[in-house]
Length: 141
Image (cartoon, rainbow, N blue to C red; front, side, top):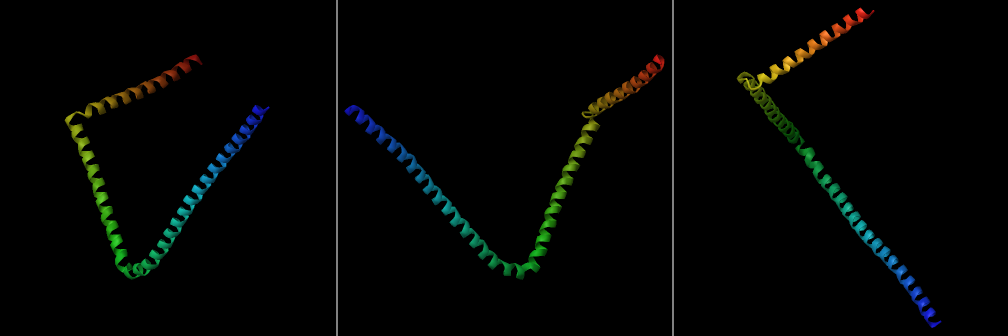
């Protein structure tokens, strides 16, 4: 009977310690989440405050310097657009000259001629194939 009592008490103490550990873990998880969330919320608030202060300071400067900034931005945009267009046209020209060189030297013309012959033969096959089908259809009727 004493053995049964000890076993019963051990089981109760084990159950209570097993229940205490998950609760402790949940408390630690909750505390960590609250700490991390609170820290991020504070950082978010500080960032918002800094942004509002920066806009408050920068707005008068933008208004004062807008006659200079707007033409400067337009000029920079035009310069960038010009360089990009020039580069694009240059690449297109190099590609065209490369194709022309390959075509004139014969390294690319064989491929083009072979492709032209294949397309021509397919057209002929299709043309005569449909003609033959029409002739066969008339003969059957």
